[in-house]
Length: 437
Ligand SMILES: [Zn+2]
Ligand SMILES: [Zn+2]
Ligand SMILES: [Zn+2]
Image (cartoon, rainbow, N blue to C red; front, side):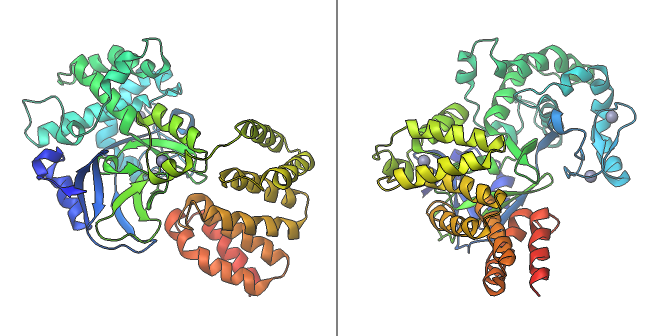
């Protein structure tokens, strides 16, 4: 990636400077803007820690998560709006200056916020609000958007193509109908154009903030993060601590390399990855892995059968699952060139063996799983790091103490960096370790 004149990048100076302090710069290549490493980073390094420009807990999780710190804790409702929750007096007090502006409004149209919409409507409201605050702070009068929002891609034309009754438009309609007059009452002059633009930009750029079990609990806009491009063989991953996001090197990175994350689940076949990326991010992936894998002829009917196995597994039918998956392993893996299918089947079979209490078989499957998965992911990934903990647990059950300890040693730092010391995975790891002493 060639270094550009910073004005061509359309990235606010303060973002460029912050990135630079962390050894990262912005450059342009055929994909558009991207981030590059200005120095070497070892696997597991936290490159940068970011707080969101705006964020909101998703409607269906509002009862479990603190609206200020984003953590899952025992929470109490705001007594005025009876909607947003806080984990402590501290969180409530520090959130009040901004919450007081939206509190009565939320109360007046609670039904909007409790609906589960494709784009979090509270996020749109708060982003519009932050835009006004930033414009005031930065003395911007001649433009509709502050630089942090201005820099974002919107794919506006794609949204205009959508029929107006499409689900993606629901939030936009609600925003225009209700928030705009509300914001106008408070002295902000917000045009339809701004509302539509912010809506489109959030649809493309907002980050899903993941909870303890990688489920989406909030969404947030992290302007620096939006500069990261996708790869199906990424060298970084995002790790969440409440509303904060940590960008972590998932493998060793060499100075000059582009920093990439995965926008979608990469343990999927190439056609599925491409279709998801097209749908979600409006581009067709031509990363090296996609190019290599598009040459592989695969029988797609097998994938339909795999879906059926997943269904049986969810229904708790372990024996059925086991028969079916060992059949698939025996009969179909011999001439398969893509291992993704095997990874997915192995994930299921080891669980099934655990459920059937056949621990030795579970362990041998988990070992195969780790071996094949490493073609696609490093131990610095949400899934694979936890598979190591599961492996240690099985070893401990079989009294393979030395082996279990070695595995825990390998997994300890990745689990700590990815999930944090308070997370149940880290606690589980310590517990297994204690049992081995
Ligand atoms: Zn809190
Ligand atoms: Zn309130
Ligand atoms: Zn790709």
